[in-house]
Image (tube, rainbow, N blue to C red):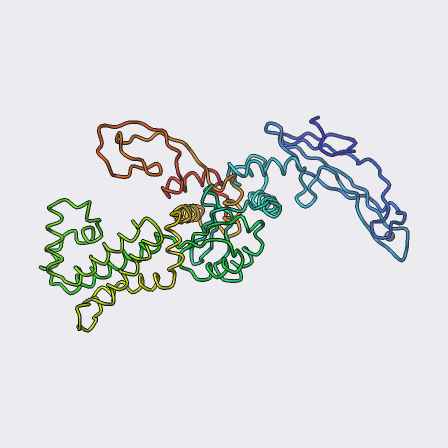
Length: 459
Ligand SMILES: [Zn+2]
């Protein structure tokens, strides 16, 4: 007989079938006072329960136990109860060690493969994982980040807010939505709020309001990439505006217009410069937008908040006062029509933009983490919010890091593990990099799916 997981079990017979062994027996008699009135009890017959246990080889093991039923002697009380079976999860009719086995394997294997191994229904496996996971999440202590990122991820038709620790590159929490009451509840419940020094976010006013209300000492930084994306969109809108008004023949003359217009001037070869300048000379709107775009990019090279402020002010002035010759009526730059979103963001988020220039915090990790979550969500064939949240938060660090070998051009500067495209390559060398899962969403999703057992059926 394998070692018995049920304390006080007294074996009376063993039934052996082809692939199953069932040990039948009684539980040690115990005197139990009434749980309601503490009075004495009558025996009131016996129950029966077949308890599943871990398998031994190909043999499934079960324990058939007969717990005592009781009835309170006091007629006014009338309470009935049943003897507890130690070592057993009554709800699932399984030994605790079988439950532990399932939970320990659920992180690396699919529910159906575990279910197959032990001969039970995959839904039961998924349920057990969910229950244990929820209990673990309930009792976990949140490690409050010093540098926090908050962002949202669109999954199916829902938008979920994700809170991360930018320094440790881990996920702190995923919220069901980004409504004020939801975000506020999280921040109110966050322990050791005073630890938070910086919060990076995109231009969603609810986040800013809630952080200001709950963590007064934190510096809020608007994510730089968010503003950059707006400027890129503005340039793109202008290009499409011009292109849509061209004849087919004229349009053919505009080759590579997108990449030329979005390029940084220092990266253009002389041929490209000529091509770009010819385009700008032909279309003054593009010329105007391109110069605002380049000027916008220069803002981010400022050395400190003061210099950045000066550049932003100049940029804004230039957008509204095209001609400041004495006596001239100020006119609006043609770019104003396209860059008004950027201008609005500069106006409404100036403090948070200038805060970036103090320590260059960005939300880049959050954004790429979100890409990975999205990928995981797609691979998982539409996990519910709850099951996705469990898997994300219960993986050890929120994200698995791997090291791998990378062939890179020698002496080329490595930016976060990836060849930045600058510098002169003189051959190749192999370097070991820590795979930063925040960079490559596909690699991230792959690692995540390995860690979080993609393939658990929809729960
Ligand atoms: Zn009683």
